[in-house]
Image (cartoon, rainbow, N blue to C red; front, top):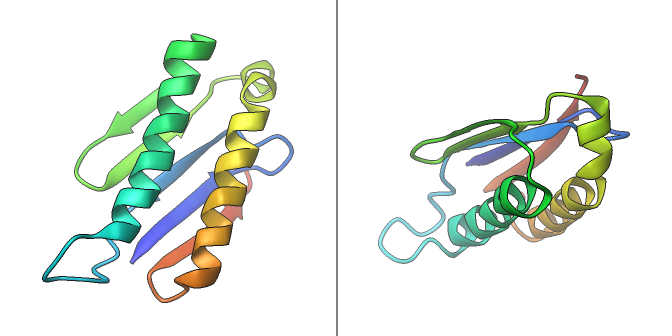
Length: 105
């Protein structure tokens, strides 16, 4: 199962995505690819487009990104809110394989 945790709610300060869906053990992992693509797009936009240097860890099905300040979170608001919406909508179709939640900062 893929587990997604967003840090905070208004504004979101970052996210942690971990695990694999294991939805299709003998073929392409479409769900993992969709979640990974959205996470990489968000991380790349934060670092390369906005130009921030968040805490960023990425290794084997585990991505952690957290901005350092409230001001940085505001700069990333649209990206983080968009990612949260996107992943929640996907989770509606795949509730056994993808869980999304928010936690306090």
